Image (cartoon, rainbow, N blue to C red):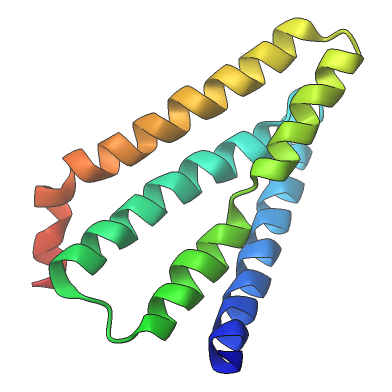
Length: 130
């Protein structure tokens, strides 16, 4: 059990650093008017987790620690439902209702679409691992 926690923690550290770096870069490029960083990491993470899931279903990861490190750790920490939730509420409290609704709607629709796209593209990227 302790070994599994180490794999999750190690992956989580990498995922959190990647999310932080992506957010810094997007704020520098696009500004703070809209929480674009959270939206982009959630869409990207949703897509990548679906790809990892497909790969796991087709080829089996070498061991449970690989899933814990990549799926639970890296991608779990890279995506962020709690930050998204806070941002939506803070936008609404600031009476930025359109931005709050847009952020909530875009996260829901785009993240679900990213997972659907990854599953739909499965025949096109599975050959990479064969």
